[in-house]
Image (cartoon, rainbow, N blue to C red):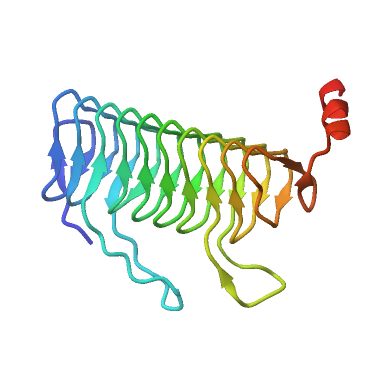
Length: 233
């Protein structure tokens, strides 16, 4: 457990060692900043946020123990109230993190990227520049979401095994500019191609080609006739 000391920069602020706080940083009450956290100019940390925490792994976990490392909050990034940022995460310039989020070790959040409230982002996830993720999304370990993607509320990117097999599959990947509707589930090993569209509530079990629209359970490519009906409805 890191050694924390009170700071007069904000009410009830606790700060660890090797913490760098640049000019113009705004910090709310009851914030905890653990060791080796760097806050760049103009960053905003809301009430009750915790930065740079090192987690203790479960003894049965398949993942390697968290390695810690420096945590970077980029210039003019904003972190919502009571969000948790683990050690080794990086939030890009002008990125925004909503309230009550969990950002695990090794996450990279790109420039101008937005993560809505109550999202859970697992270890080593990469989220590209300008990608927008609405509330209550869940992203499994190692998933990649490229630049300019959109994820509606409640989207899940799942990692690991499927229920019908013991083989662990690679993390899913969302290519540049794709859009995923509210409540959709992207299964392990699936790649959603550049500019593709996934309908709300879909369960995507196979790769989606670039520019393709899919919907349903399991998700299938939309025909022209169905597209016209959807537009009229």
